[in-house]
Image 1 (cartoon, rainbow, N blue to C red):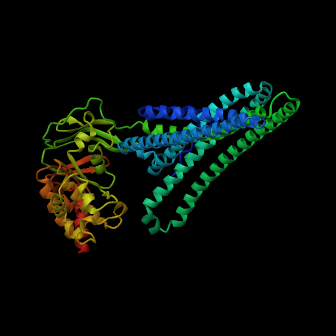
Image 2: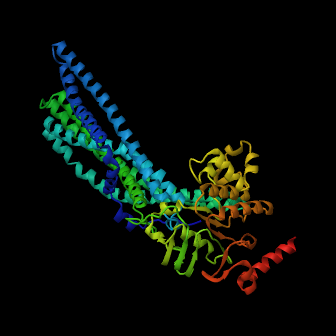
Amino acid sequence: MAEPVIQSQEEREKSKRVSALAELWPFLRPYKAMLVAALLALILTATISLILPIAVRRVVDGFGASNGEILDSYFLGALAIAGLLALGTGLRYYLVTRLGERVVADIRKAVFARMISMSPAFFENIMTGEVLSRITTDTTLILSVIGSSVSVALRNVLIFVGGLVLMLFTSAKLTLLVLLIVPAVIVPIIILGRRLRVLSRENQDWIAASSGSASESLLSVQTVQAFSQEDNTRRDFARVTENSFESAKKRIGTRAVMTVIVIALIFSGVVGVLWIGARDVRAGDMSVGELVQFLIYAIMVAGSVAALSEIWGELQRAAGATERLVELLNADDEVADPASPAVLKRPVAGEIAFEHVSFNYPSRPDQAALRDVSFTVSPGETVALVGPSGAGKSTIIQLLERFYDPQSGRISIDGVALADLHRSDFRREIALVPQDPVIFAASARDNIGFGRPGATEDEIIAAARAAAAHDFLSALPKGYDTYVGERGLMLSGGQKQRIAIARAILRDAPILLLDEATSALDAESELEVQRAVEAMAAERTTLIVAHRLATVKKADRILVFDNGQIVAEGTHDTLVAQDGLYARLARLQFTAGIAAA
């Protein structure tokens, strides 16, 4: 199992700041009207909250009034204020929560849209499970901030400032005594807040690592079970998960300590100040109502400070989550579309040219996959690529789809360099059957139809017949509508390949790429599919990668690869006569086949 990339404490301390939340503004900007409405509702509720203690003071002092009507009016006024507070709070909750859900949905869509267009080189350095964790776990943290924490924080800031001002008007003496407590409260918030920021980022990193570990293992569950590695896999996942828990425990402990210190200091100070206030009431320097009003404001201010100390931790966690998501949105892709792309002329003829192409995979920079490779495939020509494993055959397919860019050389279609085209422009003209066919968790019909959305029922069935898939698909419990499971779990390897071939046939593109397309087929199915492929290739430019030489004997031309270079070229008969690498491979395969028979 790969270890997660956990940043050092110095890196986290340097990079994680609550100001990172400003990166969310581009997602908030389209909803400024809703944001303003929520802010107005927030100001309304905070203002009403600050008015309520004044009404309470009048009620308390009104108990001594001889006029009962005046006392009744005070109670009615207090009820009216409470009703407005309830209405404003409900409106604020609706607007803020809806805004949070809308923004987070946009962030998830933006991150996914960015990730789905990234080249395979990007995913060599990050686990898919970690990306999914960022899209789910990190966006959930942001939702809690936009939909709750920021609103609550702003409300508490308003109550803190307004409460202090009104406390000062109520009793300047008691207010100044309260302010003496503020430095003692702020210091632990700053010191422990820094520690909390570091632990929050570390915790999120371990959560992502845990998600990545689980995703990798579950996607490979058959291999894990086949090699009896369940216990080791459980231990690996448990170790990463326990590390996540230990990190969370440190974060929770730090936040708990900070909360204890802040609340203890605040309320101890408030009690001391109220003791002095009670003495003033006895001395006649202030009324009971004024003391009650000051008490309510003091509790509101103290509560707002305590709430802000807790929300600060949430904001720091969300800041870390925001930076992680922004990292994905701003991630550099080694393969990028040009700012002003060229356009292929239609109809596409399908000429393919490699000119002095050399390439190293990013994860293996010191090992050349291709070395100065040059060849041209004419429109409508079928060319086979053969050679031992690791010779560079599948790399040709990867580069032709522009999943990677070569370090040197030029690759073109109809004379236009791939690097000058938008990737979606030329990929529409290519049908690919990969070595490891991808089957989606959907119906068989949907999997074939993925090749050309909008294809008719007859076209899907015709493609399945051509790929020798119609008979087994018709025999499934619900025919073409049968759900085939995640990654085609309900299908055999050969059935998956036939669906992938049917998908490519349905695409009906001028360039056909077959990467070991018949390797999982039995002899009878391979013969049927080979006939379909030959019929399809007759009008298309076709590249066939194969280890089984029987599938390439009828190719117009065969390129023999070894150690990243083309070492021979010609027809099957010509290459056999040369008695080189191809002839040795042919003797091994055909001799082994006769012996097996």
